[in-house]
Image (cartoon, rainbow, N blue to C red; front, side):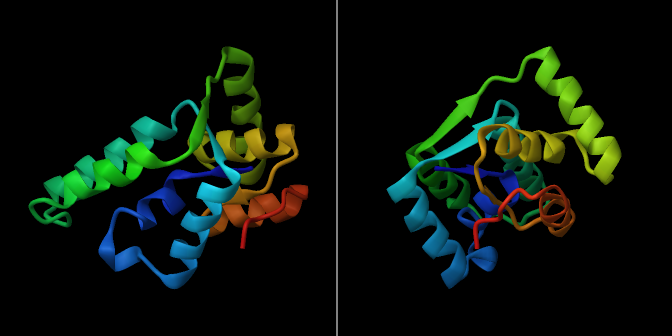
Length: 134
């Protein structure tokens, strides 16, 4: 099992972001399973809405993304106030958004690797010793 962030999830929704590496990661997700913090679904949904508004998602592509997302074997971990505040400290320390810090903190606290396409988050992971899913 590994932590999945929104940036990597969206590579499975946008044709122009899909690569052989992202497809290999998707296959790995179906084998191992994934976990994400409680804000992950709304972060992904917001990115899809933004893409639709900007014309990045052609007609019918949002429906395809919905099908892909609904099939993902990702457990959602509810964030309580303590976890949110811990993420704030991580965000401050590593100059991340609180959202990205929540992914990092979830991976660190569970001893899991993190799958991300976000370079700033990847650097923070390396700094604190959280392995990255390659």
